[in-house]
Length: 398
Image (tube, rainbow, N blue to C red; front, top):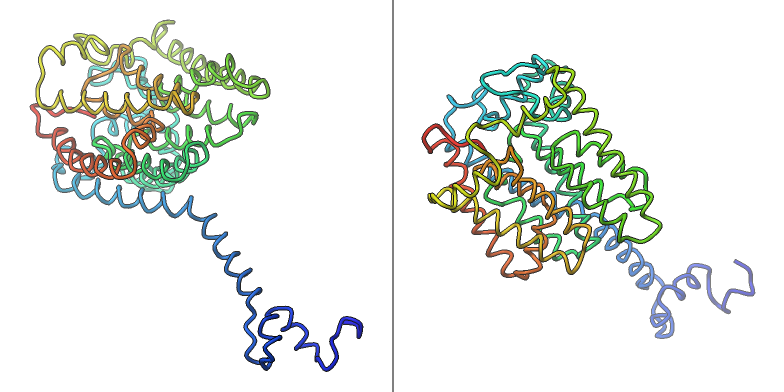
């Protein structure tokens, strides 16, 4: 510090303190009690800024973990071990099919009366990779599903926060995490991986080539990946010019992945239409829209519950049309896929989970207080949905 910058009778320390707290300097306070107000303010602002930056991790992580604890408790309480793989209530129904693929690969002929290629390959491949540790696929699938859901919840919240605001993001994630069918996120199912892939897709810039990679992963995980292609088509036709090239790349990636999967099944079954022997022919006697009409004509309390939840999520998807067309089209397309051959009424609540932005649409419709009330009702309804998996005659797979 030069002499020109010093005040007469001031030491360098006093000069610094004068700058930190000029009011105290004018009052003649001794330097040792000066409060470094400016320094404290900057430090506090820095801490607050870091806390805000971490909020998009902490808030969804807490919701995700709390919801997994809730689901795990009721699944362990209500699902007998005899119905599961390795005694895990999270390794049941479709999870057992995934474990079969992990162990024996895909078959061109029917296995236990159905075709295992109805299940897309990304999830069993990930379980297979985890099983290289020597752990049983049932344990690997269960742990991976829960961890992936927490990661997916964080990305999902971020997507909704950037597009719809933090309050709606928190409400939407709350409704998704505690939805009546959200126990599926704790099962060794492909839903958490699909949610992670689609959230990463929407989080990527609409001019980024990474969107094509995430879209391909979503398509390799579930047929619901077609909903990503549908939203990209809308962006290609109606979106801003800079994003149209990426939208075209996304459509190309999803089409390529699905085409390769179709041809693999054709090679496996020696029939070009072999894919149609998978999910579309999973249950004899009609699936998709035909089964839905039958359920409406012959209602039971379970069918009413499944369809009611599905309709509620559909309303949330429609509510998004006025605020975010891309997310709305994705949600509507994901919901519409349930009406195709291969869709089952007991599985409709699970199909609705793929339309994760629709839950933010519900948060928009109900507001903050209404969202918390609906989330509470969802959490209680989840108990019944878990029980229906086993309590019904012969059980009903989600």
